[in-house]
Length: 229
Image 1 (cartoon, rainbow, N blue to C red):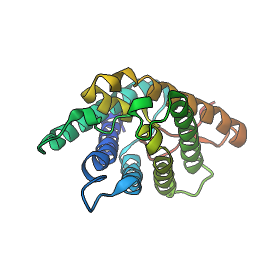
Image 2: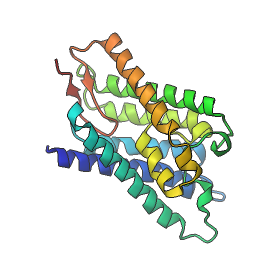
Image 3: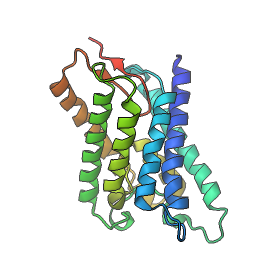
């Protein structure tokens, strides 16, 4: 599959992740008498992952910039679509955040910067460990989307009250671009923390699993790529 097609797959996968996750939070979480709540939002996000994995493709390090650009653009377009939908209701106020990630006054539970940083590092670390393990060449084939989807569901159940859950800089960037102001000012945390967590997971996995048969995968890709030597 060409890089352009794989990048398009990343765009679609991230678009669906952000629209599904943020959309469920903004439109359905607190709907009177029938709101889906935190559990519903967490399940909605988890259910989007198998789709993202199925439409993605294999990649190598040199393809990373294309994937990053595609994911960020997909997230921004999804946030824009969500904004257009949400603004169709009388009384809609963008200051509510459009499910943007935040800390301090903009944390759903009022958690501090330090709490948000630690939460995002740990959650991303565990997310990447599950991805790397589930897509390892030695792992049972075909179950990666299920494992990754349920892992992301649990991550959201834990961290929605703290930061609204990022573990993906693109997911954070989309709503922040639309909301602006405080969301853009706090966006740095939701790039730094996931990158730290992912980097630590990569190093830990190489120690625990070894490089010879391990597989590398982006959060939006379905098939493992055997490590090169």
